[in-house]
Length: 334
Image (tube, rainbow, N blue to C red; front, side):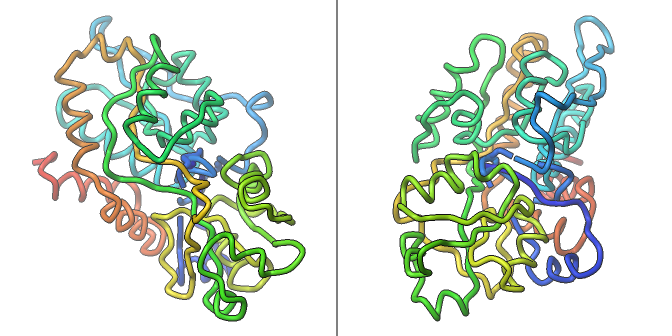
């Protein structure tokens, strides 16, 4: 599942971030104004529960009754903002009126906003969208999980085509920790002692692919330190030895001193990027709209998404610029 990445921190956290600058998921789920995705799903955030928050969005107004403005909402991390900009700019370039409400927050905020029609379009993470959004059980098969998500959302929201690009949660340790304890797999974390000190997003203790999953799937006892979702705080805590393990996103692990642990217990499901769109938008614009969105999704792969995240997080480029360059390179902008 997917989560988030704090927007442009300063001081020591930014220095640490520049060395690594990272990522999930699922998708998760993904969150405050941070620079990273999905997941402890897509992949979550440092915001208060949805019951105590409201969504500040551009009004879902219409240019004419037949041509509604497509209001895109992104999760509270940089990867999601980049994706929102990719779809917005492509839509506008093809004559569709579109707005983008950036880094609104976690799925607990975006999903109700989508279902109520406050926003129309969310670049989702397929596994986290199903599990966190509906309590469903995603699998490692993206298309199978997409079918389950489609059934859960019908009839008010359409689930469009999967992207090959995928961003999963990943548990990471430093190379010195891996060498000292002989860590290669997540199951090896039992070698750390009676408990494992895990750092990650504040919602991690309630997420089945984060703290709960380490306990239920791997039988670990976890001491949790709330930090951020795949962002500079988690990176700095790992580098400084404040935590033993960090939850990051697979498209945001740039620090060569970090070791990704193999998910040998199969905790993480498929987390392909997948746009979910209000059905009235699909009805208003028809197959040409669907084909455009699907073509954009199909053109983006995991390697490219990782590079876009690096430019945003490490090079500190704006999401607008990163998105525009990718669209131009792929031939979507003239």
